Length: 314
Image (cartoon, rainbow, N blue to C red; front, side):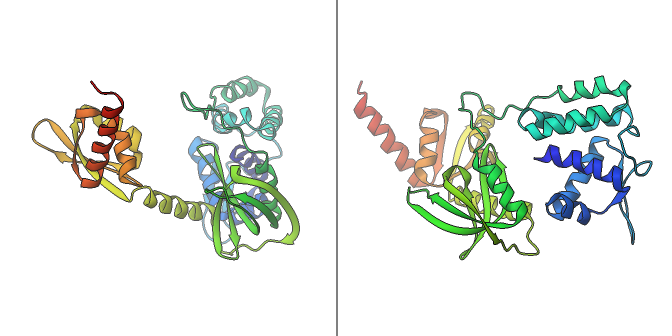
């Protein structure tokens, strides 16, 4: 979890005095890009870390190496605990790390640091949504990623078919409380939803991973591909400007305004995987939304309207 890493980064910098992003990445078993982002996050939050360019450079804490946190100012300590504190609610390891960190602070800072830890709560569940507990398989998969060992997966696909495969685990991603495993297979890189993994059995076989693999970059490629699939059909609609924000909330990045129409309404472009997906979202709007194109979405709306009229005649 990121909170654990940020605490570990601070402690490593205190014990070593100066570290490079590559050294941190090797120590924490993350990519160099991730280590660099962690260092930048600490600096942005106000923790006194700064880079030194050139040969023999790296990142250091202001004031040099220390064995405790007594060199942090009150504001810097609060910044660190505000940054990592929310994760303590969902991670026993982060909670334990923060307790040790509090004890390392000067007594005068401890109360404010503890208050900063408790100042923010992360509630990942949307209004009206079901809680999505963290799958137990995540911890096992994280271990295989860190130890670089192959794992045998029994996986239930989207259509329900169950397959078994031996994969090289490369990294895990938590997107909106849904976990994904990026792994190497005999068919190249694949993405697995962790909640569809029926069984995961770690092995002692070494796992291969490309030298240039960066988890964040690979995940962005996955996101881009999925978003392309989710925007195969585009529709142009007319709606009053005050309703645009509602459409944006529903369609997200697949909702774009396309200028005014001249009658007080605006033209909006919407996208979804199929015409039926767009029609289902717009059917409840009635005459509030006027679909200009394509014909396929208009036909789906007409079909839905006819079904409702047949079910509920006047």
